[in-house]
Length: 355
Image (tube, rainbow, N blue to C red; front, side, top):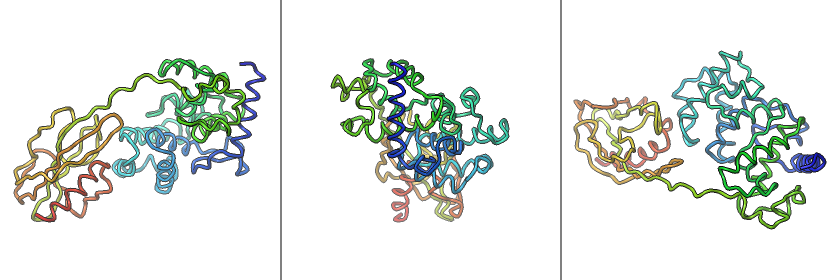
């Protein structure tokens, strides 16, 4: 693409972004009288980690909650692990929450509480990959770095009519992204591409009549925009069965909980003793008791669908568990459990109350 063509795309898209870009709680927008380079890197980083596995609407709501509880990276770095993990419930893999804490603490220890500006330094921090590093560098510090997320991949695959299927197309799209990325307002440029993909260049039924760069779009000119981007066949989702044991001591109403292994699904989180969801759905109860089934709970993770049998029991004061330990009722807080475990508690609590 010629320099004049790139400049025309840059001019049109940024003009559209200045007037139509999304207002998001972590973003300073030109309509607010601020042009580029004014965004708190802590906000950019936090929002990008949240957005990796949830919607913009959900991330916006939870971002506000996080910033209220931990307004600066210093506050987050000194937060208790279990509080941050509990607050992360519903935002995807808990490994991201653990890396969130590790990253905050490294920024404090290694960079005196200031996020580094260069991609090379950012990418050394826990949980920060090439895309997140590029997003922070460009959006927070206006460094001319292309940040390519799913929305941008779709926009560029259509703009340049990239016919290769994903993931092979990634290298081609990354090359186009680097060629287009400007030296000034790079952060606004990346966000403009993101917003165009989210609002106009949608996966299905793109609103080409509303696109500011439709005249430069090669796929539109060929009438193939609906068929792009091309993707390889998706792998079939896995489905596993398992079991969860919800026990409560009869004498003092203490709950039997355990902490899951650090690695693996729901790593390091508290919940009900149960199977490891590795295909083996049989597991003996964690202690003696009159265990009975109260049905099943279904839960979908990113790559796995779970169907778990829920067993409940009122346990004797002398019950000695082989795994987990009893948590006094005054210390038990369901909201700190991951979504699956909260869902199970809601089902089991009603049933136990009838025993």
